[in-house]
Length: 373
Image 1 (cartoon, one colour):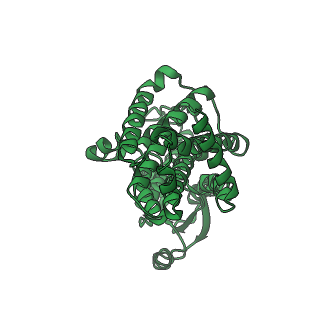
Image 2 (cartoon, rainbow, N blue to C red):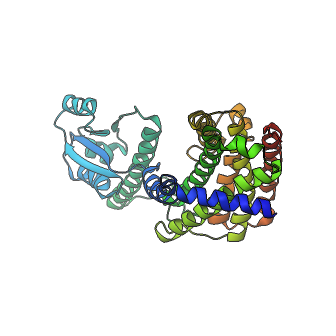
Image 3 (tube, rainbow, N blue to C red):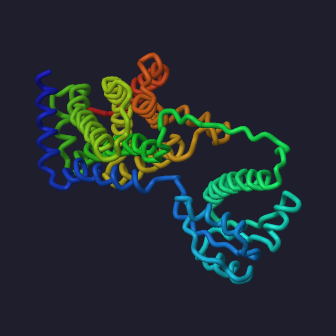
């Protein structure tokens, strides 16, 4: 244990002497968590909305007022013709054009129905789909209110009964997208920093020639590996702690679950990432090679982790591949613990998988590490 302790001391001194590494460890994660959590959002707001009002009645004006009252739409102007509206959409000045036909009010009063033309810029298909949902909700509310007004004027009994649903939003009742994204971004930072730093630190020993010097010492393989990786295991927990404080203080993300379970799972998860960093360093000779290989795997893991896109939306073959993705389990767990307040029994399947992953990954890393005495 004394030998391991000396190696750990040496590693911490080496880390804190490296002036270039300190900002990467302590400052960069703070900036990335704050910036990415605000930038990485699927909420669609400030939608450039324009319209063509061919009816110019109080009824058509009331429909436009519904859009102006919405926080999602930025109503720009009333185009005099469809041609001008098409030109504006082609230039990218507007995202949506709503065309209200002539006799809009008259058809509503007389026939109880009318048509609307809606043009949406669908270069971004996901964004267009969300915009369409927003619009349909507003038109549905408008349709209900105008029909009630018409029925009241005619003293008629309505033909149909409208059923109103009152949704109850669990785990994120404000529908704040940051509440969903911040835990995931925190997972991303913990994973990337510990993987890159641990992998490149060992390769750096190769580049400067100190690794060969340590290989010929009486230090055993397990002592060297534990001493080299333990400081980055501690740094990973420190980054997690700082990230949790930022999530609570700046973003007001709820922490309903047991913090001890978060640290328990993270402790095991970091063993997976550090084992991966050691495995990469065993097959690379320069920091540049280690960084490129690590980045290759990180990109795949991030895209298939469910952080930005739901795993349920992926093809079946892709869903099966995500079962081998450690980041997927960390994203699931941290959201379950922070937002749902899950207990140990709920996270036991993921914890078991990550524990097995840690054993296999570190076993391969230790086996592939060559030490000559």
